[in-house]
Length: 197
Image (cartoon, rainbow, N blue to C red; front, side, top):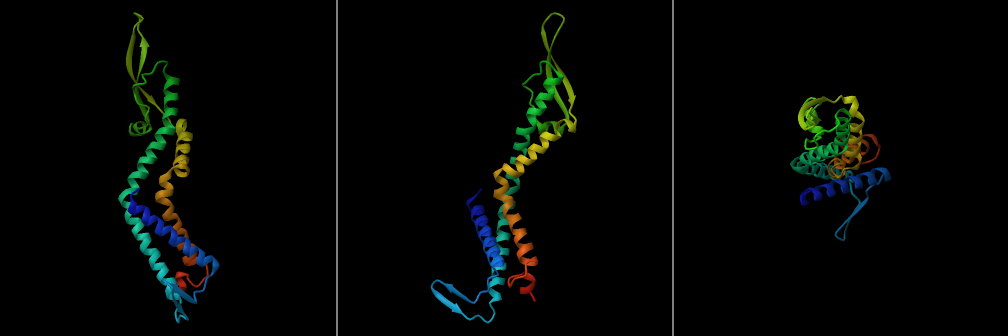
């Protein structure tokens, strides 16, 4: 993650936490202190809450811009890595079940398997009549039911245990939750519908 993205993520998460706190505590702003200067008796204190929502929208926008710059490629790279690490051993075991001496020089690749329509292209060794080993090519169909459990484990591994989820997706999930619950559902002074009336 770049320094700019980390800064935008931090700003967005802090703003979300402030909004959650204000909403759940049902805070009513009566005075404000900025750099030691006291402001009291606001005629329209809701403007501070509206300003907070505008700041939240700005940070969400900046987070989105930085996310589009680096997030999708990092998520895809981790997605592929987690599926390869989880499903490839299963593919290898299926090949070893079908052939006694497969050539391990051929890749056991989940993404290669998908690209080939779930047909594994490999090589194996066999004994000839003269007791010599010869290599031959084979195509082994791999049915989804044979690897679906490993695909599900790879998906769980990616969804729960991979840093890009918390790095890139958490900000959007938290912001959506804050906007939905604090911005529209929860009845408090900073509810967006109340502020726009």
